Image 1 (cartoon, rainbow, N blue to C red):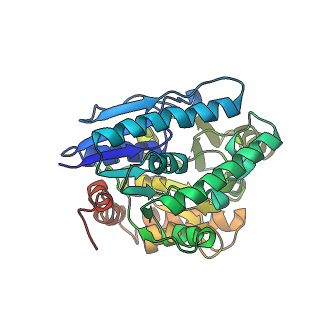
Image 2: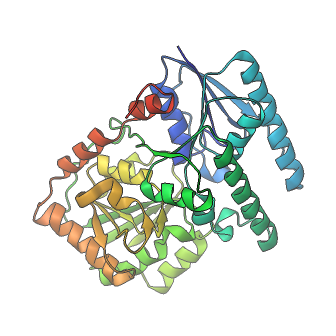
Image 3: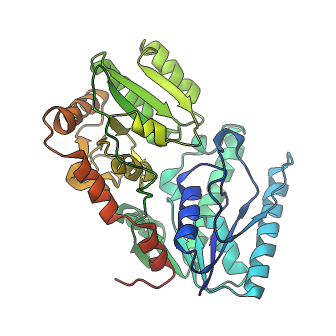
Length: 377
């Protein structure tokens, strides 16, 4: 039995791909002694319910909520460091970290075998305006630069670096050339994300599940609705700093009757089950967990070609995905119509084949065993 620490800055009941990955990795490793460590921060706009209890210890360090962000950050580091030192004293065989600051603090605390499973490269992923809309442009830019620097040092000190795509590997190499990066595959809960038997009748339901930030390129998906017939309807699940501007765009294009904003949701499965086609118009996507979720439900995914955007969509879906070849709304609308034709009208691709392709390729248990050194290439 191995003593395994799984850590990030946030955990449930916050909603997100990283938070979910901590849960599923811990679930896959229940035969070991698992400890999950995160902050006590709960984003009220992005939180849901606790899942079924796991056979593991969950520790949350306190982060103050004062107006002084520097004070909060310092105590964030101190309180996390104290927990990591305690874990070091009690014994730990392997660390799986999903956040740059936690990775760095684990190493400072003296923990060994720290595996950094990188969720994204900040230099390429985050625009300062997307990081937080509550503060001034200057303070947000400073925050962005600080996180970029911290991630650089996290990459340097981590014992092993893992990523979900060759695209992410290239990005890490561009900022730290000597990085030894291993590509691994994430997992998918195929029981939770079950096959969707819904077929289009009077309407064709499109779905986006995403944080509403600039690199998700959601405005282009909205604009594409102007090139689609009235039988197409779009549901957008998620929240973020661009929500108001996106809602204004919908009003300007007179699409309010065909586009529905649902905000952040604790359970997205019902939305997959009520949809026919999943949209991923991102210009940057190191690895889209929502692609796995949608595909596991049997929903065809429409994205832009990886030749024109910085995504790993083709690497995930291969020829099961439908790709727009030009970065404009009309091309994207044509790709949506193509997806409908191939998967539903002509049925050239069986949606169950898509689901089986995903289930076979992606497993949380395989990822966990790889990260703790039990599974080798």
